[in-house]
Image (cartoon, rainbow, N blue to C red; front, side):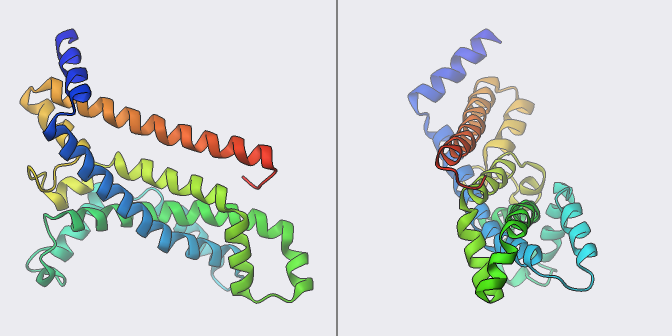
Length: 233
């Protein structure tokens, strides 16, 4: 174990080409999925937070339930849609990074939407009377709330990114773990461990841990800055 760990640290320090390629693809896929999930989840969460409509309680239950979507089920559903016999098979996206981005987006969009809904609903309760006195439209209210809660929503986005970058089940199914094409950190760790290549698996694990620590440090920094400025967190 000591020798494997030393080799792993050497791979990270030397910037091994295979390691760098896997890390770069992981970050590209997870960041793309996070941006797409934020584009879907933030407006949806804000709309549910501000709106009052029949069935809202059921929508809230569904949003919270979807936060626990099983990754392998999401991967299977995306696979069935993107396979040659599926309705989207003509796009030829299966076993490409785009299929992995789609699966991760489906997984983390409900998380972003549910967390954003809670943040914005709490903020809306604080400013509701003021918004009414100004006679603002729903769109203006949502825009104001999204801007005022931007630090908290960045934290929500970071939470979604952390979930995406650690995903293995769904991306394994739709990506296939193909070398130099769809191999990301989590799938590579599983593969290299089964092969017995512990140095590379450990090196990828170290990078994944550093990314996780970096996300948490970014969240803490945002909270600290917000506390100092008196912004909403």
